[in-house]
Length: 490
Image 1: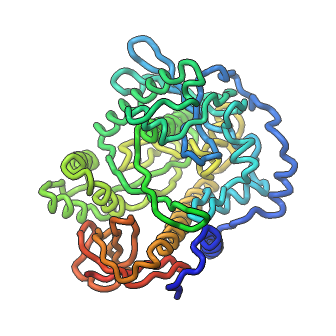
Image 2 (image 1 turned 120 degrees about the vertical axis):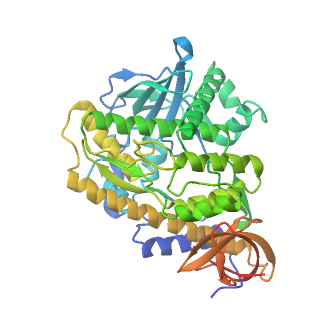
Image 3 (image 1 turned 90 degrees about the horizontal axis):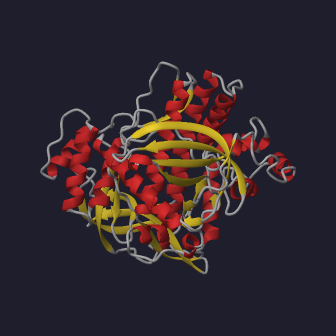
């Protein structure tokens, strides 16, 4: 057990991440065969990728985290008559350089996702690809798959299309600065003003995204808000946890990606093509969600109902905005995790409970997620009339594999995040904190303290405590190596 922390830096966290990844069956490093394959890839050999459209002149821009280099998507808007807007989403054509059954593809299959830890990011694809040749980088011509959507003034999808094209990123933008500008709390960035008419285009995109969001919530999409804390380092020593909140820029990208994934799923269904779907089935613990609502003087129906749950969430967010993230976290835990399944022609998928969409697939992040690369390959084959790259049996195996590896990746990320939090709390053994219960099962009871926002296990005094309960806890033990943060009820 480790109670006194000598090293508090990224190196320690990276070592922990590598150990846990190996324990979970991940490959932290690329094989010699993958590195040799990478050395032979010098450039995008055909910038059109067989494209039928040259769309480089459109006002494409990327919006992502400040430090993101693996750019999967670009967006652009176009005003149409009757207040309709054409929204185009360009997705990087990763398949052009990452072919199936190669060494790099094998690594991507094994890990299935980029793993983002406090110590290091372990990319699904080599950085020469994911942050360069297959990334939609600033001022670079790139092949892409374009999802083309016409949205009317009410936020309804009126038409859709998908095609191959060449695109060019005219502005690399960040969520924080774009969100502050759209919300009126910050100035317009130089990256926006440097491109004529881009500011107006982004405001148009923002208006459409808000309409799409409103329409989804009318259909029962859940308005959930959690606290995503990232470690803050000074000279490789962790000093704080910074909470990243949603803003209008993150919502813009989120709503466009949901719409694009929906369109992709519908397109493949229309073509009678089997595909991977991402689903969240009906909540595993709806009874406890009903109890939490009752504790807040709100009655939910006995059977799962996303619209009713959304109305409850809206009311609680308005009444208690400060504690709403804690309620959201409780609901998320009780909804259960998502999974990948195969949708076959004429056999509709269950849909996505939390998003209130029937047709949903992962298709917009092929640099970071293997299911998106699978979907991209199926989509490209369908567009050009080639044989499908995967059989139904292969898709079923891939769906199960990707579901398991995504769950494992989240566990790796959570453990390293807890190790980072344990470092931060190493000098606070014996301190008391306000907390909320985030998990209660036979294997243990979990709580999250509010300041700093850290989750740990309640070892003593957990009797009668359930998800959503608030309590005071005392920190009694930490173990950085194992990511243990242990409390007892105060």
